[in-house]
Amino acid sequence: MLAEVAASPPSHEELRRYVRAQLTLQVDPEIINPFSTNPNRHQILRDRIRDAVLRRDLTPDPELVDSLFDEIVGLGPLQPLMADTEISDVLVNRFDEIYVERRGRLEFVPNAFRDEAQLEQVIQKIVALVGREINLDKPLVDARMVDGSRANAVYAPVGGPTLCIRKFNRIRLDLLPSERDAAAANWVSTGGMSSAMGAFLEAMAIARANILIAGATGSGKSTLLRSIVSAFPDEERVITIEDTAELELDNPHWVKLECVHSRELAGKTTQERRLDVADLVQNALRMRPDRLIIGEVRHSKEAFYVLEALNTGHDGSATTIHASSCPDALARLELLISRDFAQLSPPEIRRYIARVFDLVVFVSRLRNGRRCVLEIAELRDVDPAGHYELFPVFRSALTTGQHGIDVDFASVPDYRPGPRLVRKLELQGMRWMP
View (spheres, rainbow, N blue to C red):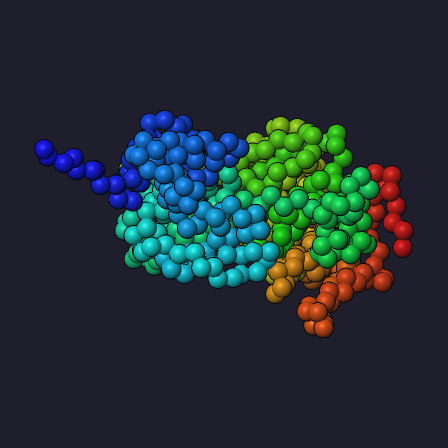
């Protein structure tokens, strides 16, 4: 008699290919997407992976299932980092060098790809999910995932392969402690501003002041913008315009508009026109907004149309800009407009900006990861010499103390609001109390 030869167990690569094929046949592609927001995604996929492993006469122990999940329908060694709610950014410098930003501070993590090829596979997976491609001819890709996270990938000859993922920000902070929920996080309790600053910004939001929020990348601009918008009266219609949707608001009368980016697949343009912030601002004016919120001003055309829109009587609006101080925010806005609108002289641009914005707020991330409002200033007008009349309302002083960086949130003693702000306060039945 001939003895039966037992079939050898499949290699990990063979098992991975088999499980991938089974998932492709049995599961909706939307659920397979690593950035899917389906609440049952993990359970559905892990059940299917266990079934597939059992069909190959193997034991689906948790470690094997987790490994297959991360490799096939996840982002490999990045998957646990994406699942960590305390991590806001994932930065892959090379296949064996990964950093994350956790609670505002950068730190090295031991997670690593097997080799450069696995990193390239994950990048290709991310890029393919949004109908884009990355190769020698197109070595740069900036893409938004379905959950709102943004991925930026770089290939040779520019560099890399490297990958940066900014996870979708779900942080919600009130300006002031809530009477309804004392445990709710807010800017005052987290040390981001003083109670006086929070009360001032809340009053300005109700009084329909136009606010420009400045800060560096990751400083908390969008979080502060969301907090200010949350202070708007519930009955007002709020329209948000963003390049990438980040603002998740609780306002009951909220309409969200998001830019549409051109996509290229196999070298063929599938969408002829890109709808940018300027296009959406013009359309939003026809949608009867009470408040117009622009996520961020980045380009010349956006800056001009934002100013034009806010100069049409839509008080109580707000936007953000990359800058390192309140004066620098105005200078940057002025520079953006002057790039494409050379027919406007610098004094004309400054007068235009000064007529639109009432307040400039500067927020910063400190070395210890803490995000703080360091300056609030009122913009009243332009003086005869063509300089901005920028009056500080609050100034924060930083000192190095025994327990790290201390912030002294100080109000300017002799500050009094200008005529325009006084008028806006009066229209809402409020008055300034020195």
